[in-house]
Image (tube, rainbow, N blue to C red; front, side):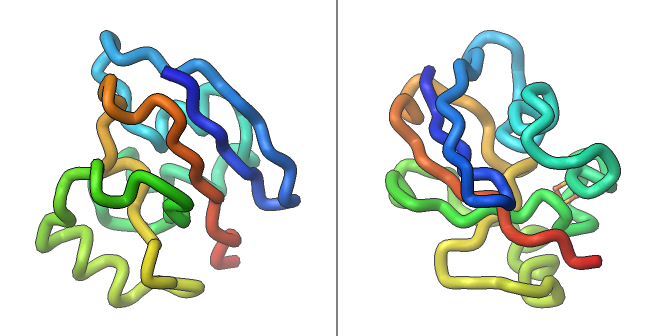
Amino acid sequence: VKITIIDREGEAHVVDAPTDMNMNLMEVIRSYELAPEGTIGICGGMAMCASCQCYIMNFEHMLPEKSYEEEDMLDQAFFVEDNSRLSCQIPITDGLDGLEVKIAPASE
Ligand code: FES
């Protein structure tokens, strides 16, 4: 699927995200190096760091509900908006073709 990812400098990148590799959105962002190493995915996708926070610009209703762990982590994170999600908690699925997300600022 094609996903538009807006990096922390505000530049938009349209990337191909595979649906058959069991990837989540954080891993896609990392694989295209759209955020500096060490500033995203610090906990390895366990919903325990919030470094992978993104703002969901469309398709919000298509995403899985937030887990208790994700809610809890977002409660403690910086720069949280109504459309914030932890990108490691978003599996890449066919329904996400055309998704647009913006990477949240790094917290340090
Ligand atoms: Fe740590 Fe997503 S990578 S919360």
